[in-house]
Image (tube, rainbow, N blue to C red):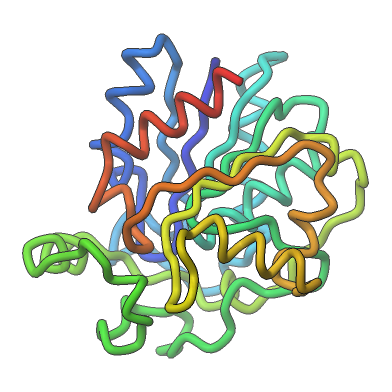
Length: 239
């Protein structure tokens, strides 16, 4: 199976380096992806939009000719792969959302992050919630910050655009990593929000075929539990 790995904010294809070996060992062809403007801190990010990110992944799907693909999206990359599935529902055989969920039409990824000019640099760690940082020790934080690339500002604030209800037919896996206080597991938190009718999980609740699997850690499992993340993705693909 062809698997396209879409990173979240501040990350490039290299974020998946330690995740890919279990996928390759399982016989899959892996395509770690660097989104437009995310190749280097020196890239020009002015004017890059969420649509530019979506269009780049759509082009990658189309470049695989008639192959069916699995899309994996971490964090902000989840909105990207969901929009790609909306554009190419017949080509995507599964979407895997890593510590994230599909977002509904009109929502934005995160318009509260501090913007500097046309971009969003990786903020101070104090901006993040404590569960985000579980497992991210001082060494991993230093490596992450050294490799981080600012995210184009409009990617965070442009609205998600969806139009094809066939996206609800794409089998969906959520790999749930964070559990906030009061919840026994990450998956129980998601199911609580779904049961409460939260807008955050409304799009997930509308999917015809979804599963939520636990991988307890912080928000960046590609750093804190990369092998287990690769194995969880491989397990989802095999279903």
